[in-house]
Image (cartoon, rainbow, N blue to C red; front, side, top):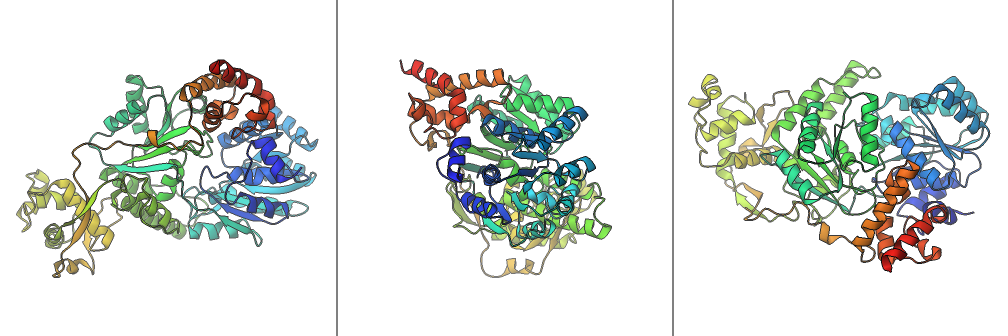
Length: 607
């Protein structure tokens, strides 16, 4: 059997995606490989395909129980023998699985990094043939990454205990240049074949909004997209509870997930979401890493996350099936303050020295600044993300809210000069809110207490809306004409470039034109680029059949077939098993297992 036969037989695809074949060939040749590929680009196939062709066992080091369980269920459904070793197994289950592994029953074993150096597992690994070690979510090994896990540093120690060194594959979707270098060194990859397919997820529509009422914005979106599966990320447990409670009160099937819940409740919530019992998951960032649910149609960030890496990873949980999906960030200035507080009060990492921890905090502050710039830019949102990861594009994607908004250049010279003069005359002692209130001529008691009501700039911009003053301040901050500190209570400071504002050249800023009618959040629904014309009535019938089978087999519906496969079926309307095998995602095993039932449902619909 060759790699193409494995691809079709077990995974139901006819061709490899960009970058996959090069990594697969490298691993089959015994070389190390390092793949940086966006979520949904098919990283798992890059190591699963060679694992089925190599003589021996492939170990996949994975950070989360949910990820392992999901991957193993998917492989078993495809006819591949796989297992996982993590803390969810009882002592009896662990020993039984280890015995089966010794007997050679599994081609692939997923293992938590904490389990690698347990004596029983080391003895097992030293007496079987380990042909490959795959490190999934490899950015977790980097102390400068957003998801550092100290246990990942032990992977190299484990490999060195093996009687011979297997080939190593490392994979991640999020890695800046510094994190990539850290991964190469920490995993001791030897002359690896590096494949970077790019960070662009073309099927995702990015949007940043600053609504006065965030919950009303969420309800408007969900009401316009009934039944669609989505995730709402919140910064705090309290916000998760509030949003979830409000959704349920309005008849939305929602579940909650955060670290304050018991293990059992988190497991119930996750299962309800994966099995489509609830359509909306409201969660902190404790949820989602490694969740392979393919039909997530939207991810809404109720609060701004702490960095671009986290946002890219969390937003990337939408549209894993390649279909159109929405990534919406609801921004408010107070989100910045909350993130600053969380950075300053983060629990000390026992692996890092005090000086190193302060350096990490410094980098976290800089990441937060870039995240804030993303939320306030008038440029292409996709381009901003790609440039952050080192890719340079045309600054127009046509599939983000900024690119689809009409902008115009406006003269903000007077406003900019007033801001700089106010900062200067106040002794550079206050934040953006006080500066804004002063320029607007607010009658607040706070301004009287700090004597800003007597400032020379008091009321100078009373005719300018608050949002415009803040926009200009953010613009000046991005351009380096002012500087907002990274303290818990940020202060606006002047820079060497501040005086340039008073040069003869006008200060011009790009701003969105006023909209008479509120634009649609998405616009994606009609713009779907299906391979064929999908018959959505048949699609719904096939979804019902999929749910029935999923309940019978006690697996998530998307593990039976993805939405993409069902859409292909409803477009092609296969009548024979040969035609059924032409459907995207249908391999030999699934054709044999489910073919007759789906063909019968299609035939009944056509009659």
